[in-house]
Image (cartoon, rainbow, N blue to C red; front, side, top):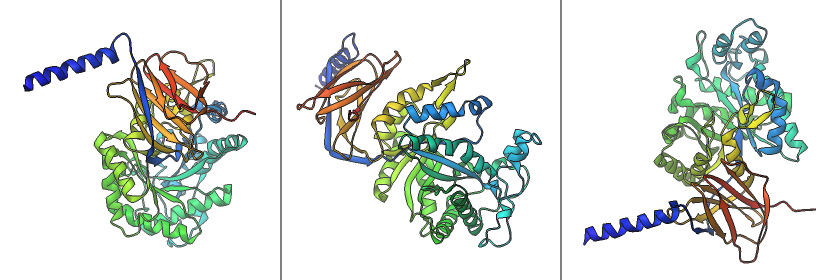
Length: 450
């Protein structure tokens, strides 16, 4: 009897495979479930790198123009190196040709105390040249272009201290009071010089790669820094732990949380994807974020690895509300003739960026088992909806329960694709779509005409 059941099941699977993987495919139904809700999306993020390559610096304004026009980012990660509290003048000496790049890299993280009182900021003891270079050459030009389009960027100030790279000199920021002084000095510098106040604060980039720190020592430092920031009138949301190994996220979070008040301002549980991003770890991050009433964010997976398949999993398993695929300069590849070609992973990812905007709430979406499609859907504040389908292969589908109206439909596959097409959804809420191979289809409300 059991053998017979197994045989029938196997034949059923073969039949299903013949339908879905054969030379022809049937149209499947994608069901939207508006009453089932998940995360509220917040930000598409990128990092303004300090220098970039020579070609990237030469074409940076072209890159900024293209990003402003084609890639709707909403948040920038602005990094400040621990070595800004020193008198080494590493970057100035490198740009002047006095030292080589490896010597400069080693000077980005050792510290020299500004004075003997952590409650007194001595401006002469801080050198924010690196931070200013990043602001002047990348962040401000990007902000200007966004502003010209009636848009803006949220900013995260991220502290970076890869102490393994230090060749000579010390490091004093594991003292909570000294760390807090440095963070306050950086916030005040951005406010006083640029009129910029970061929206978020990331206390330590990839702490699992920084042997000088442990979760238990980072907790007191964060608490001290937030006390100093609050006392000076700064109230950023806190993003952490931003580990390189996603599987270490909750261990670091729990260790930091052993310090009373260290997580009081937590806004987002963040992770990078270089290691440990198995399904169980992603699900655990999503569960912890929901338990704590905060969001989750995948905030680094560079060098073309943040594909649409990764993005889709992060949205639907880790329930991320923010996501970072690349550093700013690498969104486009510079061709031999100087023209720019969008990076292949971003060509697909940007369809998600266009369809899913800050404030959108993810709702339920279902596709039949073994169908070509995996859907993700979001409801906007005005009640309209966006749907993005990850297609594993060619196929056709009908999306149901869409609000009536005009939508933009855009596809990315290995084949060249044209511009978005306007399609109409009637009172029955149904929209038919087809894709000719693996890729992405995005459907989102068309802008009002007039």
